[in-house]
Amino acid sequence: MNNYQFFTYLLVLAGSTYLIRVIPFVAIKEKINNKLIRSFLYYIPYAVLTAMTLPAAFYATRSVVSAIVGILVAIILAYKNKSLTVVAIFACLAVYITELIM
Image (cartoon, rainbow, N blue to C red):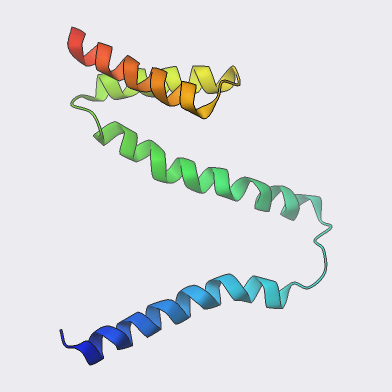
């Protein structure tokens, strides 16, 4: 790949990424009052983060059993409103202990 081709691809990528972020600001100028749309937009970041993180958690360990144990520990601690650091530490410990036992 030569420099001309690389920078052409880079400009196309940058332009498409920029347009995806700018179009909503240009198209929607007033505040959104519809409750359904507002709740939909509120939960999108959580849904996307879950969709990206959860599958990776199953492949990050040696076995699916230890991954499930770690995910269950994380869900329980998150449900009890523990901090992100506490949830991550205890989920990692749960996976480590489960793999030691197995």
